[in-house]
Image 1 (cartoon, rainbow, N blue to C red):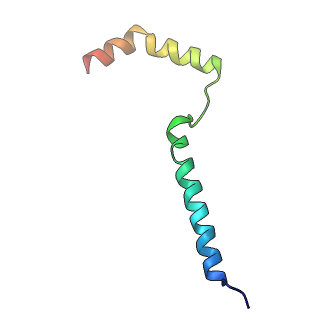
Image 2: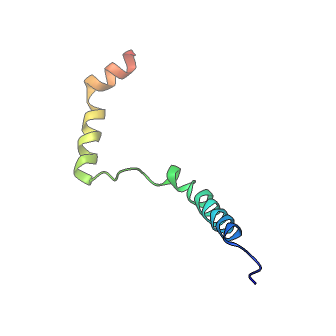
Length: 60
């Protein structure tokens, strides 16, 4: 006769998945959602450094 039934097996599996999810949780705050290509980064830098944008940000 088996010492454990399927319920205990599923509980152990759920615990393993819960520990794995907790280990993965900090990565959501470290890894960026989307990588920006160098050309997009240059465009964003030019847009943000533009005088109109800077003056609008300072005015608000």
